[in-house]
Image 1 (cartoon, rainbow, N blue to C red):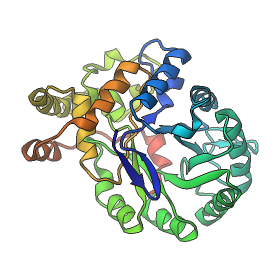
Image 2: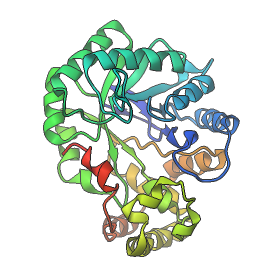
Image 3: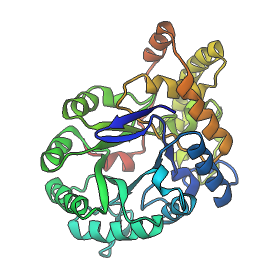
Length: 325
């Protein structure tokens, strides 16, 4: 597995998102044991970047990652996120990036992960009630204390990124980016490159849609949150299937899967981009990592670059409302 740098932090080109290991997608029966095997297999194949968050579970995902990495901590860049749980009484799902809340959050994450430092610590969503300067100032103190090594932002807009970076260098931005979510290309990517900030795309497989395995909304369980995602609903779903069909044509030419082509395209977008496809299956992590060896020719790359945009917003109305612009 090749390595790149996001900011000043070295990571494998492909990481592993752990969110789906704690119930965020109903994609069949799984177990903690299987998830741990998946993490171990990823490490064996050269992945050095594991992404989790306080809100996943909540809490249990960090515990799972900590258990899986016991005895292998030095091999891994651990990324986690704070700010989607208010420890001052607001509770789970309440955005809170106040300095006091950060202090409480980081201590809990360190304990659950079984480590004395977190390599990359993200603000999960921008807190409109706390100036970003105050949040980054608190994180800078944690860097000085050695409890975190690098600071990240998730779903932050251009102005917020500039203000944050003026207080302390930001190492990475995490935002959705894939063949069907090209939004970051207009303003975010140019800014990140101007400032020397790395980019960590989440959902690089379009919440599973770009794998080609989902051909009908009926395949999703009633409690699967994708049932409320505009791109998985009604006419949007049918239109978006055509995107997958085009990706599949390229995959067939190369003897690859549609997921591998989607990841290979993303890896071609720059050496400062480190996607974190999520899975809790050993076979899927093996499939995803193999994308690092796929070479798209100029014609194939051009066809992928010119795919029709996805139909529908990338999140439902409530989720889009808390994304910083």
